[in-house]
Length: 146
Image (cartoon, rainbow, N blue to C red):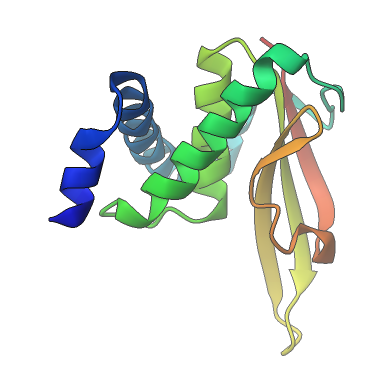
């Protein structure tokens, strides 16, 4: 109940961004269920990156998108882990005409099993998945230039 009251106390712009993040997380989860070869072209230019500098006028928007993804992902009825968050974040940024790069990486866990991780960067800011990304070797990257 407290979370619902908190949500309704937010300003209109923030409520709409959180709702949009929720919808994009659902859309991204549906995409994750498809064969990767089918969705890869929609993620951007394969094995390319966007610039590491961002226009300072977009930094606030990028941080707001990152926060919306972080806040809404635990409240979905579906799994919203790293790849889902990265795809949703990329979609939210593209809707705002902001470039981003989605990274896919692999590593081995303590048992020697192969694990994967995804993260999203816009300019020099990591929108999602930055926790633990240094442990992973980048195997694919997709530059979304809008």
